[in-house]
Length: 111
Image (tube, rainbow, N blue to C red; front, side, top):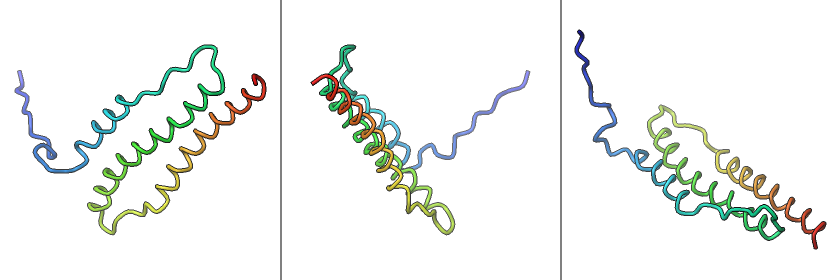
């Protein structure tokens, strides 16, 4: 029978800032879940939901900033992340916009 040898991972005990970023992001999501949309939703329910993707992307951006900054600092020559913020802003806008348009369409039918 062979004996297993467990080695300490290289990150254990390190002060790398990204070790806490993931749990902090998940905790923030858990603290602010979206309000459930009722089965018989109205435009206000959707408008309320349209803001939630912005909150999620803001938290994701903060998390990614920590991870990507650490990667950039440890990459010879750095990383070109010039488009990263614009991509996240576009994502949040696209998601919120789709929900907002659905609310406007619903308002036109309901109100």
